[in-house]
Amino acid sequence: MIRRNVAVSTDEIEKQCHFMEEIREMPSRPRTYHVVTYGCQMNAHDSEKIAGMLEKMGMLEAEHREEADFVIFNTCCIRENAERKALGNIVWLKEIRKKRPEMIIAVCGCMIQEPGMAEILLRQYRFVNLAFGTSNLYKLPEMLFTILNSNRNAVYIENEDVIAEGLPVRRLRNDSAYLTIMYGCDNFCSFCIVPYVRGRERSRERKDILREAETLLKSGVKEIMLLGQNVNSYGKGLPDHTNFAGLLKDLDKMGVPRIRFMTSHPKDLSDELIEAMAAGSHILPQFHLPVQSGNNEILKRMNRHYTREKYLERVSALRSAIPDIGISTDIIVGFPGETEEQFLETMDLVNEVRFDSAFTFIYSPRKGTAAALMPEQIPEGVSSERIQRLITLQESLQKETLSRYIGLEEQILTEGISKRSSDAVSGRGKHGVSITVKGSADEIGQLLNVRITGIKNNTLTAERMQNP
Ligand code: 5AD
Ligand code: SF4
Image 1 (cartoon, helix red, strand yellow):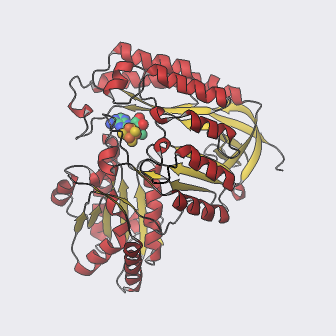
Image 2: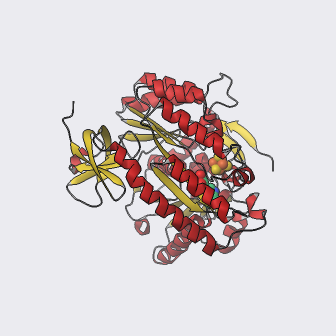
Image 3: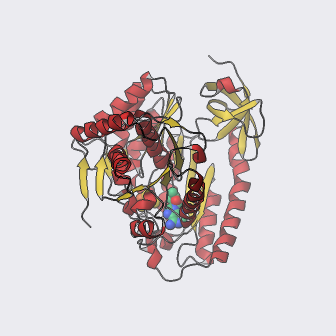
């Protein structure tokens, strides 16, 4: 398979804008849309671009998918259960459409880009009107125009590693914004399907990122979340020798109140980046650093390119430069061949590091990846039992780990009304931990000064302080 690496030309983007106008003028066009998103922040941000384009075509968002004229599923395939969930919901909508035959159903995202998926869709999901992969996202206007004018279903899957600048975006939040700095991944961790479905690593040009950040800052955002599969290797292949540390310094100078980023790879976490974080005024003291396993043999077979010792050394380096930093991680249990002893080394690492939080996953074989072909796949029962032990350990440690924040003054960016109490709001503090404090709906999206008072259900509680 030949992959092409292209910056989408401004002519091409203009062509797509033209299709948006054309659709807007069509009397029989869909009037409402609903986007269903699965998976990571990258997908959430792609959905913001989809919504942006659909609104430019004159569509309004429908609250519920069953009411919309155009429903689009933006899928994820990182683990089998993500895929199963999406397919189940797509089939459910087929039934709804029997009552509303004018409804258009589209499926896009990582799952479509999986090897063999196009054939499955064409054979078993023929009710899907439009399917397209991650490479084709920017062509949504043209694809929709084509099916609206031909009454035919279409599947578009290309393998271009594109960067498309200048697409309209309809942001879900006004206070906190996603900003993609790089796409794809070249790491080929042996368990992971991302490099196959999101393509080769490519970085956006620094000037385009800074321009977008300026626009966001002017629009009043209080926080920017930089996105990429491995933001630490930002800049590879760019002519101006920018790296992630340099980009962070530029953004920090710009004065965005809060800067966060994800995800990072331990092998690319440089001292220069740690120094830039420590010296910055707006870069939040939090770091998501997926470890995946605490055993060297497993790390090697995962193709992670670091050892347990190296990981621990990077954690120490972060903590000595930024003593109050909040560190979170991802862990996979039940990787092929993982023995009880090797799993215990992961438990031991969790004990040693004391993560603020850990996302734990049972290994899920993904067709086309190296690990799916490895012998000694671990039985489901063994993996479930291991993950349960890991979760129990992390939860018990987390209480202790989070107690170090009690008494500290913090600032939270409120995200919504607390799930547990209608007169409280919750949001993230600078360390990345969720904090709940008395407040009301009109304070959502505001920065509030608080003092941490306690821990409840693995999140922090706080009292209000005077805002400056
Ligand atoms: N099985 C289980 N977990 C996986 N992840 C990635 N691929 C798989 C897989 N095949 C996890 C990793 C990664 C996170 C986003 O998802 O821990 O860091
Ligand atoms: Fe997947 Fe590894 Fe790339 Fe992360 S770094 S996206 S786990 S291949």
